Image 1 (cartoon, one colour):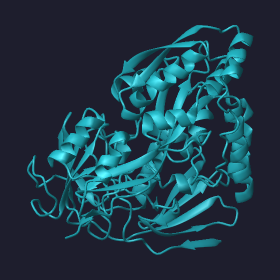
Image 2 (tube, helix red, strand yellow; image 1 turned 180 degrees about the horizontal axis):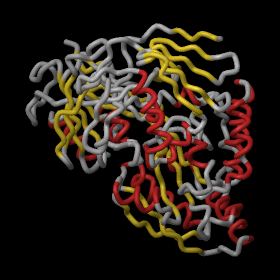
Image 3 (cartoon, helix red, strand yellow; image 1 turned 180 degrees about the vertical axis):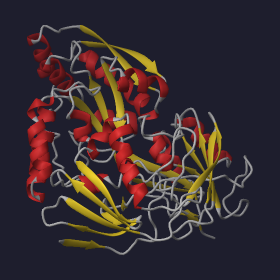
Amino acid sequence: MSVHRRTIVATAVVAVLTLSACSAGSSGGPSDSNDDSVRIALTAEPQNLDFTTTGGAPIPQLLMTNVYEGLVFLDPEGEIQPALAESWEISDDRKTYDFTLQEDVTFSNGEQFTAEDVKASIERVQNEWALDLKKKMGVVESVEVVSPIHARVNLSRPSNAWLFDMGTSIGAMMWKDATELATEAIGTGPYQITEIKRGQSISLEARDNYWGEAPAISDVILRYYGDAVATTNALRAGDVDLIYNLGAPDLIDSFEQDGSFTVQVGDTNREIMLSMNNKRAPFDDVRVRQAVRYAIDNQAVIDTAWAGYGKDIGSLVPPHDPYYEDLTDMYPYDPAKARQLLKDANAENIDVTWKVPTLPYATASSEIVVSLLADVGINVTIETTEFPAVWLDQVWTQADYEMSVIGTAEARDILITFNDSDFYTGYDNSKIKDIATAADAGSEEEYIEGMKEIARTISEDAAAEFLFLYPLVSVSKVGLEGVQVNEITEALTLKSMHWTD
């Protein structure tokens, strides 16, 4: 058997926020608030606490690695590290994983974490999850409880992706008897939720009986604002200490010139995708989808909508993934070619409805995209769609749309998005289905080459238009350190945050 043993990283990624001890309106950092508290501004509020049935990034952003932990976690470089599993062994045929669990780990309700919870958590994904992410657990054949601290997972075939995926939300270890997931989150993580004020904030506090190293920040409050302007006003007024994921890139320069704030710019997994319903006219014709891709000047979108921040990558694979390829040359900006394709498809001067979610990057991108499409004869009517509730229901769940836009935030989500013709994109996955299965079961080299072929095929078919890779821009008060630079999963890092003098 091959043996994988790693030293536990003390600064495990954490994603939760706790109750602020600061009064609203205070203007300083730790000098006029407690140095173990922080207030963070966000714009997308979780609809509930159950990411097993409710899609979107806000819930795992809040809960993963903070309230919920996995057997493993993904470090800032995307490498797999131990978490609730102290170590693991993989059989020579790569189908059996034996996990040795950390001892004396408890849930926030005081119950002991054991291999029974590992079994229940994995089986919950397989049997009870309502989201397409559950398919990532489909390779698991069975889970055995060998002892309270020894869980054995048997796969139906070797998988290059499975252990990595266990570092994402599908790997969340939940109390085996948990039932009210939408209203109560019981986890092993360093934080627990103390208060939810719908439409305003979510508060958390550090657990006294956490099994790992205690976080420096013990009380945090996540405050949710209606738009990016409101978050910047809150930071300048001293109502918050940090804007995580600034939605107003035109204000970056002013924050950088102000010595009271620290600005960080990093990368995310969030590919801003202009989705076209492949099953609905006019986008059921590949030529129309290709015309859209030729009509979009990606750099102009980045410059106009996001002040030059962000990257043009040409696919749903970010540069930090092992199978990334620069596919930006596949559909260069060419409005003349776009018009010809529309003529060939008998789709000149067509009308399209675009359901734009109420998210900063979506609204910021809409004006220039509408202009570029109008230039080639695609007349777009914007239908503003409230996010998350309405957008998740109409677009994500019912696929009741012609065109939309969303940041696909899950790690390595290209197959979730396109390897299912019933998913909201409606892409015919017959070309990639067998390639995906063979790549996952093959060698590491075969996996990388297979996934590259899949990304190229999806891009060639113009299954969607990939506008840009969203940057992670954070602005904090000077003195707040340890704010994560890059976003490898949806989780928001908190455990590493601390105030300095």
